[in-house]
Amino acid sequence: MTAIDRLAAGEVTATELVEASLARIAQVEGEVGAFVTVTAALAREQAAAADAAHADGRSLGPLHGLPVGLKDNIDTAGIVTTAGAGFFLDRVPAEDAEVTRRLHAAGAVLIGKLTMHELAFGATSQNEHTGPCRNPWDLTRIPGGSSGGSGAAVAADEVPVSLGTDTGGSVRIPGSLNGVVGLRTTFGRISNRGIYPIAVSFDTCGPLARHAIDVARVLTVLAGYDADDPTSVDHPAQDYAAGIDGGIAGVRIGVPRGFFFSELDPEVEAAVRAAAEQLAGLGARVEEIDLPGAEHTHAIVATMVRTDALALHRERVAAHPEQFGAEVLRRLRSAESITGADYAEARDAGRAWRRQVARLFEGVDIVLSPTASIPAPPAEETGGMIETTRLMTRLTYAWTLAGVPAVSVPCGFTRAGLPIGVQLAGGAWQEALLLRAAHAYQQVTDWHERRAPLGG
Image (cartoon, rainbow, N blue to C red):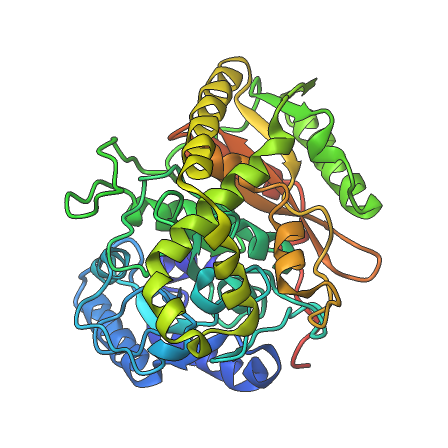
């Protein structure tokens, strides 16, 4: 049973779960560094209110009493929200982000704010302003990013559920590297209002948890149109956990030849191909497919993300470059050479890719690939943040550019004990199908149940 199930069944109280989270944070946080801010007093207050409501026979919502952590670019009224930036270390929002509001309305309890890569502009989460985050499975390695703390906090059992943001892979990569489920939703599915942006062309918000069913439950709370968010799309939401036990018999899964399975760590490839075989054993129709042009999507997204990011920070880069970390500043300045024609060309290529992907999903229901081509690299990687970020996002940008949902699901470990994730991508608005496939896979595997050797 997951924490949500245990709360609903009355097997545990909100206060007991909160105290367990706070105790675990006290035990391991000095090693992991997943939290920027721990809201212990608020969490205890909210948990007590949840338990009082339960005693009165009242439910506060589908997440009644559930401890959650939020990436530190998600606004929380009255609580410091840094976006991982040195110039925002004292920033206290006056209002909650829309996702924060929806979590509160569903009865969730805020445990704290989670470490992220500076300005969500990188995939290592080695943040010189708020402190580095490390991988619970090997503290010498990165947790991925930019939502590194969101993945590490779940993997370290500090919180059962977290929220991150995914622009080019920033939920899926921490999901893969930390051995938890991480979902990027269809662009416009979840409101971005009150979430500090990095690239408004691609930014999304998504949940992380050990279990796909918990991701589905949280998505049900978060999904839905927000008329005050210009990126939100008015498309019907649903109960994503309903029907999640329906299995995947007859589901068409394509395994792409070429790019997605080139230049892989051999252990990653073996684990992902084994996952495909297990899904076939559950009744899915697995076949190889061609996906030409995927190898070009990284350059297209990189052009647009860097340009969007520079547009957001142009004045500060010019006037106060010292306020940025050296590598983030270098990455921002790399966009100064991108012309308007370059950006227009990238947008046109993106439109063509989205049309191609839409046609692809007329023939298959899911595309299966690795999430990351390698397991978590060392934190002191000699290639530097920019090269590590390029390597980490190599296989995730294609679905970012298409604007479609993709979920990373734990599918194995290397001989050194590092998690491996399989990426399942679907057509627009097909989150329920992806989570049903992830859930079916988790019913016959235990990769997500394994615990990091941490805090003995």
